[in-house]
Image 1 (cartoon, rainbow, N blue to C red):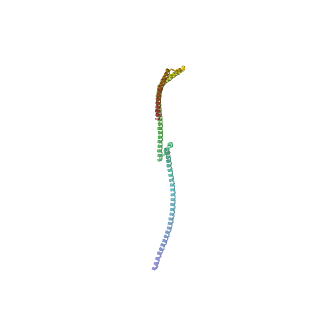
Image 2 (cartoon, rainbow, N blue to C red):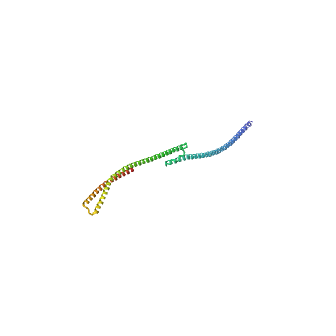
Image 3 (cartoon, rainbow, N blue to C red):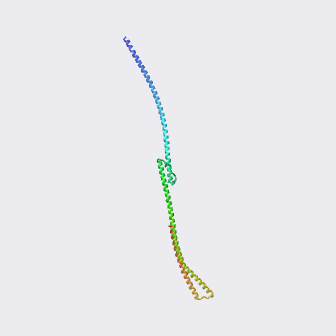
Length: 260
């Protein structure tokens, strides 16, 4: 009876143990199935994350390339916007240094540093133009002053020449007057001697006889006439020589005045 009761008591324990084992097996199976599903989901999540990350990377790379292109384009535009005005400013400076002041400076209306440089170059060009105009005015004034000085010197020289000519005219008149006396006397003596010679020749031809007294008188008259002629002509020669010396001195003084 007791054994039957013990056997009856063990049967429920076995059933419970079997139920527990079955439940554990089911739980383990469920856990394994859940683990598989979790691994699958995790794998899918990793794949999805990898695809998303790849998409994000490609998009970021595309955006980076676009931004890089924009930055390069902007840099090129900025460089061109700076380089072109600088080249224009350099061309204007070169034109100014070569004396071409008619070339306008570009970019003076800009409000940046390049515009400030252009305005500074424009001021330099205007100063150069003003300097050139001042130099032209000074050159013109100098030429006018030199012309006036030349005319003044010419007028002064003409006045001096007129005074010298007037003095020379007075000298010539005086010399002519002084020379006229000995030449006139010489002409008178020569004329008188010529008449005396004609008379002597007539007397000689008339009777063919010549007295000693007539010959001595003719010789004395000839000697006196020759002495007077020599004396007066010598006086006239001295006066003419003095006139030539004065005229030579005047010519030398005039040449020295012209060379000065």
